[in-house]
Image 1 (cartoon, rainbow, N blue to C red):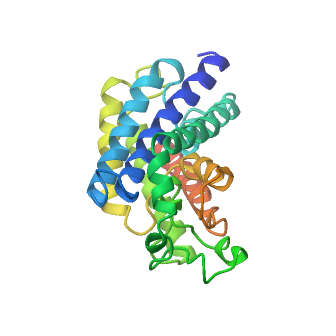
Image 2 (image 1 turned 90 degrees about the horizontal axis):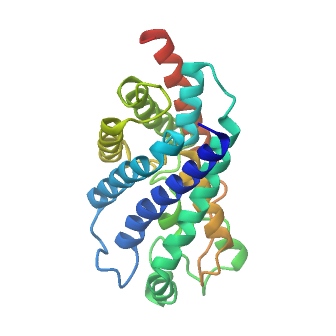
Image 3 (image 1 turned 90 degrees about the vertical axis):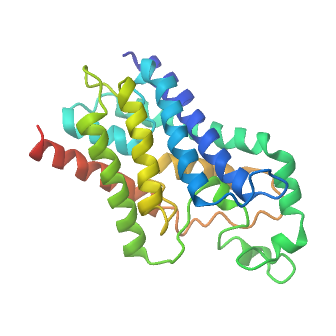
Length: 264
């Protein structure tokens, strides 16, 4: 695979991943969406199918890493770090593009949701009348969950551990049965299996933090949330943002090491 193939494949694939994954979060969350309040099972299934679809699309070009944790795990397994920066660049760009596409697809729903005083000022959301703009920016805004993850209970050690554990499971599954014969990425069956693994992680381990298990899945859309001209959007919760980046990277690295010790 050439560097250009890797970059293009990861950009397109990660954009599709975030478009479909962020799209199901928008569908379940936003006012005037036909899927509103569909629940966590719909979100877990949506993300699993998003991974599968993105992997099938980008696999022929880049091997469908779509996730810096996957790139790191494979690099540790193979001992080859030469294409790592190219993978990372395509992944973060694709994640940001995908988040913008979610905003475009749900533009009317975002406007309706964020201008509804009952929703914007409701429990757990941003009370724009009672709080200063500075105070709003410290915490998560009312639609941040469409773009990025957040914990139900803020406990740094637990939240970090949850992301490490979830990503470890994902990477071990990919490294042991999801690679094609050349070892470059997901094969045809591997993409399907990995999609089901993501659903399983979401249903089993997604409750505490929303299971980022992918640094760019969280960071790219969070940056887009901070930049988009959304009314009453509140803060992007940057104080938490490092956990869904660092946790998956640690989990991916541990999985790569475990693979080399136990399976290689």
